[in-house]
Amino acid sequence: MRKDLYSAGEKKKGTRSPQSTVTMYIQNKLAAGIVLLNIALFSYVYYYAQEQKGYAPVIAQTSIQPSKMKNTDDLHNVTANTRKVGIKIYNIDVQQRASVGPSDFWRPELNLSSLPPSLYKRGKLVFDSLPKTYLPGYKSACWKLKGALKCWPYFYLLGMPKCGTTDLWSKITMHPDVRNTVKEPHWWTRARLSTGNLAGYASRSNKMVQQFKLHPSMKSRLIIGDGSASTFWDNHSWDRWDGKRYEGPKYVTADVINAAQPDAKLIVILRNPVDRLYSAYLYFNRKNKVSVDRFHKAIVEVIDRFNTCLQTMSFRGCTYSMERIQNKFPSPTRPYVGLYAVYVRDWFRVYPRDQLKIMTLEDWHVNCTGLLPEVFDFLNLEKKSGKTIAQFCEKKLQNGNKFRLHAIGDMLPKTRKLLEDFYEGPNKELSLLLGDDKYLWRT
Ligand SMILES: *[C@@H]1O[C@H](CO)[C@@H](O)[C@H](O)[C@H]1NC(C)=O
Ligand SMILES: *[C@@H]1O[C@H](CO)[C@@H](O)[C@H](O)[C@H]1NC(C)=O
Ligand SMILES: *[C@@H]1O[C@H](CO)[C@@H](O)[C@H](O)[C@H]1NC(C)=O
Ligand SMILES: *[C@@H]1O[C@H](CO)[C@@H](O)[C@H](O)[C@H]1NC(C)=O
Image (cartoon, rainbow, N blue to C red):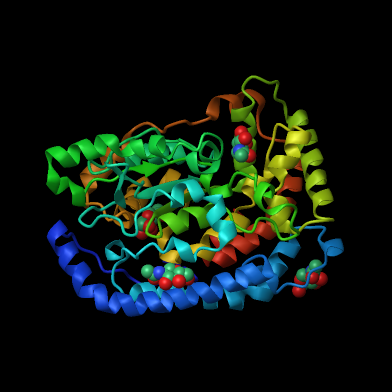
């Protein structure tokens, strides 16, 4: 098996009772205190650097000039020049966690007063409603919100659209300890910013909480998730907080979720971005006329617009700005959603590598029975027999999109070539970040 670049090594596993969690918590309190001090110091240095330089030190090191940023190679250079810094930050974080124990035992005290003010502002509504510590004994992060017990999702299926999230979600929720909920509330990236109703979002856990009342032993077992496929790539309304910045947003959704739920488990399923884009084009334009020529024209336009953006903003900045740019110049296609490396880097900036499980639709299609047990394991769910897994995997593929593809056929070869060039740099970057060349999608 190929090894991940930032792998934190094997994690200890085991089931536990609420009792043992409490004991463990007390036993660890002293040790945890020391570790928390270190983390506080680290966070201070880290955030200080962010505040000073506008973005994580990783980006701040680059000296690439706007005028040179004409193609995706530049993204690769940005990382190549600065990767060392990234790894250093990473290792500190992973080691500190490793010394505390398995990550699901680790309930750090949320010290929200140490958040940088501009990050605090982005999630004030959430942060003001959180306790200092989540309640012990639950597998999820649970707390009393205005007197009523609520739990955060234990896991997020963060993205991406048209990469098989619906099918993956349906199979994860077949596990008896995962309570099904509406898959895509789009709360963190959308609803939160308009209606802001935290109580409504947190109520997704109500059915699970009912179960806790009937069967207290379920507290340490049941979980819910959030499968909003927009969470990974943000809302693009960042300029509301940050104005126009060359580097792009100072903080993204990853920072906000991380501040509130440092223990969240994150799953991302990716796919060859060229195929993803075409699939999305066919899927999201069901009411419009689609054709291979229209697709080609749209791609040329939107890549041109992206390149125009690169004259005044970094690759990252443009990636996060295209949604807004497209509000002015509507387009039936969103190639920036496939610039996975930009988003992966932002999530890695705040979450330890071992809290993100990244997989591909290509693997999932041929190997559900191999990957589903890994996902269950990742979520610390009870193992299922090979037979049960096979039954789960046999269920019909959800949300497949074959019909329209058959109707108009594949994109034109020249369009494919254009897109392959567009994604080449970011794919290279992604394969380096994930330590696996399957993300080059060269086959
Ligand atoms: C990126 O790196 C390549 C190879 O090292 C180099 O030829 C190219 O000029 C660099 N581009 C920029 C914008 O620095
Ligand atoms: C929380 O962080 C603030 C600012 O860094 C610090 O002054 C305070 O002592 C911290 N509180 C705890 C309980 O660690
Ligand atoms: C977030 O994105 C959605 C979809 O693009 C949009 O409808 C919504 O207005 C955005 N929210 C903000 C605050 O920009
Ligand atoms: C399926 O996934 C499992 C677990 O990752 C792996 O060990 C196995 O080699 C994969 N099989 C194929 C055919 O890719």
